[in-house]
Amino acid sequence: MIIELYNHKAQYYETDQMGIIHHSNYLRWFEEARADLMEQVGLGYNKLEELGIICPVLSASCEYKGMVRYNDDVIIIPKVEKFNGVKITLSYKVVDAKTREIKTTGETKHCFLGRDHRPISLAKECPEIYKLFKSYEGVDIEKNIEEKEDIV
Image 1: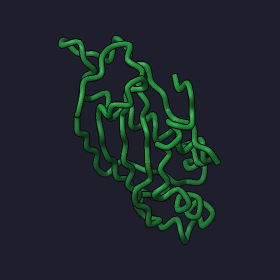
Image 2: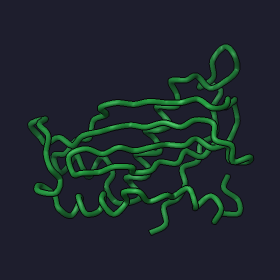
Image 3: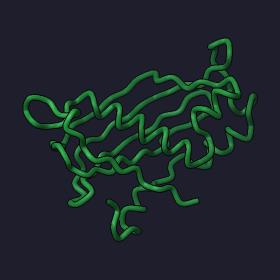
Image 4: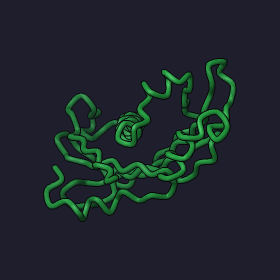
């Protein structure tokens, strides 16, 4: 399955007084790209929640490498770095859609909880979901940038 890249046009309301994207918005962009990736592989948050599974954020980090300004087109690239069935770590790159310059990198760590809000092992509780997540561990969808002639 080819994962479509997540494109975002920087909005005016996302900027700060200096005319650049406010740092807090990058975490929102990570969440948007993560939710989009999960939908594309058939494991959207709605589906997980119907199964009684939630996936809260345990930690989040960003490193800002360049400025994004109003109306810039960026690509947010999520990648499943580590997955053990109880926890998952995703990395992110925010890339300028025109220049391919990396503007921001980041990471989020999550766990899987059941209806009682206690940790669960997807390998035991939902082996089909475990296999699906495991199949995307380490998969680099960044190569899809070069495979598309016109991203935005």
